[in-house]
Image (cartoon, rainbow, N blue to C red; front, side, top):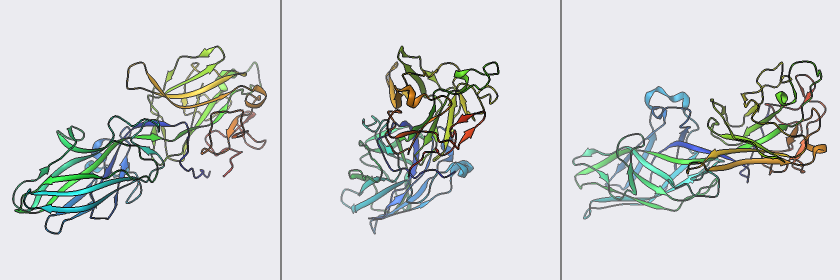
Length: 382
């Protein structure tokens, strides 16, 4: 199947923490990152960049380093693909023995950085931290970070970092931040490795919903709720791990208790996952369900809503990441016909509306089910 090309849009999205590796960069020369999803790979699999600051010529040069721990299979992206750090105003003051340069961060992902929901700035901000160094590699003496915003144990103990307290949407560039290193006049070059740690607003879209499935044999296996399902599409450029997220439906009688996704459920970029009442293809009508939520969600054939949330920072709080609803059974609860989003870039909040369509006559799955689970929607419009 061909996945649609999806621009940044105001969708209902999912956020989680990731680490993106980055390098400091030469004067006016942007250097991009490679990233790894923290929930999918160990920290030892992160891609790093080796950086060297030439004190005498006031230039910082960086090159990708081999990944630690043999974890190259977990590396995502490449040069100038996901993130850029650009330096300017590089210089050395022999009197204060300070080597300084201004650094900006540019987001090249579809996903927003520094936010969980696209609205509120993450309290931790976007942090550039020193994985190793700075270390004098030519000349004598020792180097250190002079003006760090803080120190934390991220991939090691007591690592200095700089913070960018802002949200970066796709292609946006951060405010400039001055980095200063203590470097003695006896040193010629200094080396260090930089990583970027931030929260990423993942682009998960509720893309297709089967509200009222058919059971062609009332006396056969399975009941209506066994055959209900919904599909989620990852419109971002990073894989998303849905384990730990909350899903629920809200019928006219009120919202049901949340179901917390209990097992690994990874959605690759441009891919689909299907969540349903049952993974048994005999009783569920032949639907390729990736994760079963059992009986905790039962979509009404009249009025209902489907919601994806994550736990908030305060115990008991939740953050809504995606929600779609319907109230016209003749449109959204047609027997045996799924409701499909025309394009994942569109507002999906109203299943009865013009951004959604009913699955066409041609696509069938299993036994008389009309829809396209785990495939591009039959009504997809570029």
